Amino acid sequence: DSPLKALFVLGFIVVYQQIENFLIAPKITAQKMQLHAGVAFASAIIGGAVLGPTGAILGLPAAAVIQGILSSVGERYEVVESDGDGAE
Image 1 (cartoon, rainbow, N blue to C red):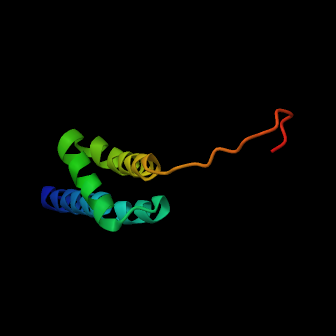
Image 2: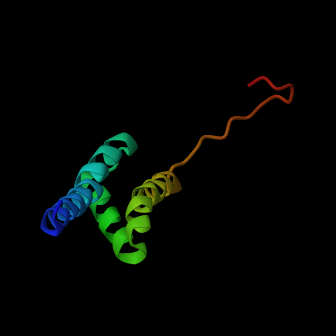
């Protein structure tokens, strides 16, 4: 109807999208990926600063991959000897 109303709607959409992308989505994704909320928030902010909106989206999976790598680096596995026929 009016340009002022259109600007108001556009402003609302932009603010809502920013809140969802930087606050709500990282918290939900962090719970599913078992990331600390601070790590999830920081990864979204850093990813957004480096690559823009795409980086904000890819920041959480990247943080989960890094966490998985770091958690398995120091892990030791036991070597099990076998007798050669496939049985342990």
